Amino acid sequence: MLTYRYTRRVHWGECDPAGIIFSPNYAHWAIEAVTELFLSVGIDPHRMVDDQHRLGLPLLELQLRFLKPARLHEEVEHFVRVARLGTKSMIFEHAISRGDTRLMEATDVRVWGIHPVAQPEKLRAVELPAEVRAALSGGPLESA
Image 1 (cartoon, helix red, strand yellow):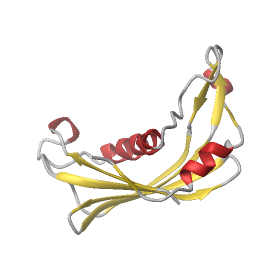
Image 2: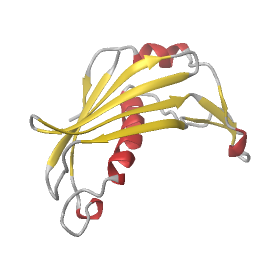
Image 3: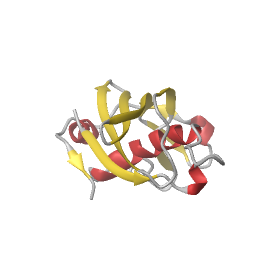
């Protein structure tokens, strides 16, 4: 399955007054990273399908395991791996590390969805398209 890796710097707005990452930011990073993974293979998971419908990638479950804190201005690596592809759902595994030190691990479950733009509450899960399944089954990618 596809693995995506990128490096990010911990910024002031992501830290508490002691300069340690505010833990909910790890959740934000995990959610953001799945979109980055999709974009890295040329798929916008939130694109308009037609004039009235938009795709979505709703999060059904997110589990985080905090191991060590990231600190202000540190560079960390975020790895996202496609762990499972179901008919309509996907499971992603995350690891954020500083060198050889694992800082956080997470697992999130998403569905491939569609909804009328004017009625986002009518979001419904639909089958993963073949091109999405093929892209997420690929080999490792890295961003610059």
